[in-house]
Every structure is written in structure tokens, then in C-alpha cells.
Length: 115
Length: 114
Image (cartoon, rainbow over all chains, first blue to last red; front, side, top):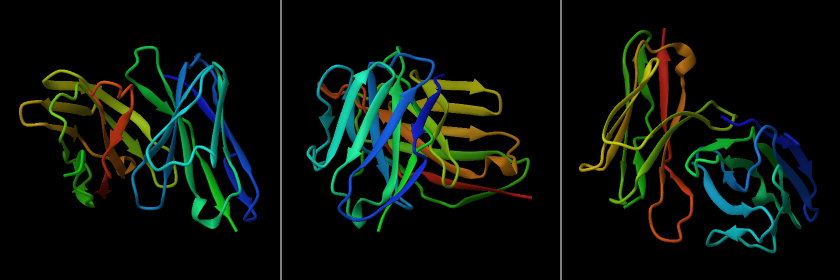
């Protein structure tokens, strides 16, 4: 497997502010990481694919200027929610893709509440 | 038609029984299938992966894949209260340019009762 951490685990912010979430692969160099969002009682929705050293690939309907992704190293990807609004309140989860190019391991998630 | 479909449940089974969780998928050429367990308020954790038709066993868990019928299932033997969680079926897309993305079902909630 892979050990993945996220920071912070939860965050409360005011509407209009920006929030940065970090995803770290602690024991594996991850070329590819993924960012998901999960609303209550719903399944995981892929937001974007984060590739080390290149621009992220966003899923249809996800605003790339609002959800900024940076994957500057093989162990760190960040997601910045810019000008957050209450509707952005959700559970944000990252995952790393193992070298087999098949298996994803998830971080513990970050719960965001925008007031 | 949803790409990955699961019965939302809840599926209730008595402790010690076999829990059977099912998943169907629409993309006939999908090759990789995964089962994740998600406890309430937590992120998903990988239970099993399966790539070939047939059964794959790991401890109390058995994954079954039938590509002709486009379904994958997860059996949990000797179910324990600690198995109570939502089980997510995930399918890796097979189309060109799909990369390594997973499509998740909405999950089946399992309740193991004492």
C-alpha cells in the first residue's frame, strides 16, 4: 500500500477566503495524484488528476480557476479553493496512484466548512 | 444508465453471516475493478482489486468478477459488527485518454447486527 496524509484534517473559513489543502505521499513517490470531493450521502466525485511537473487535468464542470492544483514534487500535491463559498463545503479527499498504474490509495480527507 | 451501479441499501445481516454486495458497470471493456470500504466520516480504504474473471479471496473477503455479465461482487464471510460501513465499487475506465481514473458507485451501506 501507500501512506497518504492530508493537512489540515478540517478547516472552517469565512466566505470569500482561500483555503489550501495539502496531500502528501509519505512512503511513495507519486507521479499522479487525484483530488475528489464528496458531499454528504453521495459518492466520490473526481475533481482533477494531478500530475507532477505538469498542469492538472480537470473533470468537466470543475472550475480550474477556482480549484487550483499544484503538484510540484513527487510527494506533495496541493488543492487551493479560491474565494470559497458555502456551497464549496464538502469532504475533499486525495489519492495517490501506485506504480502499477492501477491502484489508488486515499488520504484521510479534509473537511471544509465555509461560513 | 449510471456507469457503476450499486444498491444503496442498507443491507442488514446478522453477525457471522455472509454479506453479499453487488455492483454492475456499463463499460463493457473495463478491465480493473476495486472494492473500497468507507466508514462514516472517513475516507475510503482499499479492500480488494480484481482484474480477471472468477473469484479472488483475501481472508474473509472474496471478490467475484463476471465480465460477460458486467458485474462484480464482494462476499464477506463471518460478518462482524466492525464490517458495518459503506462499500464502494470502483471501475477503472478503459477508453483511450481515460488515464487511470476510477468511476465510483454510490456505495452500499452494510449493517452487521449482533
